[in-house]
Image 1 (cartoon, rainbow, N blue to C red):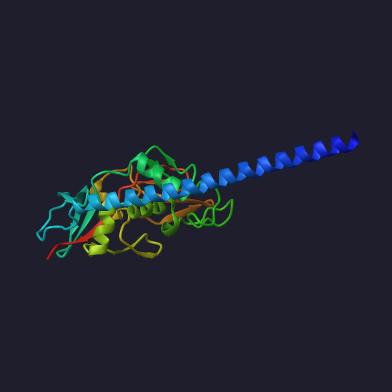
Image 2 (cartoon, rainbow, N blue to C red):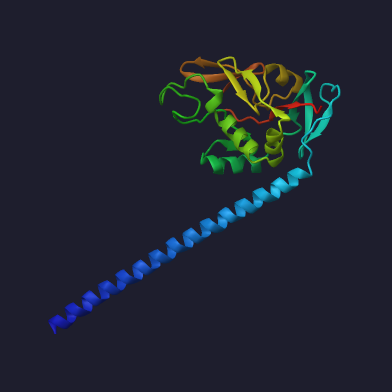
Length: 245
């Protein structure tokens, strides 16, 4: 009788183990299948966006442009900030939306960085990869190149089919610019001080140097000092486009 009980117990253990293995294999298989489906959807979506980009010309007419003139480039409306003859600086006619920022947040896997369509410049917790904070107590001068705003802007740019097409065709040009701390080079950025004055919108982030006061990083935004890790402002992209020949 004892042998039978032992046999039954072992049989039950093996049965549960087999059920567990089958369940685990099913979950793993479903996960792999879902990953394949997700990749297929991403590929189809990108192809669809690329097709849409074909209907949105990424050329700019070779003519003189006036300040704040509205132009169509790719799938968006832009305002002229400066005409330099062969090249024109353009500011997006709108700020990034909550949905665009939320998408970037999910891609970057960053939490607590936005409030609707406004974002922090830096994280409000210690991070060695965001804004170059010195330690958990002392917030160092913010670093644009690894700021939250630049990361969000880069995700938006990387997922904009029209701008990617413009970059490939050479109509979108790299800009050399500075945040008064160091020099940078990129296809997209936020307004500099001169452009911020033209746009005249105090709700925007713009390129500026940081000031460390009592161990906290502050940015000069317009006439006010704001905390880089406690203040929420909007993002308005700026690009430089080469006129068509």
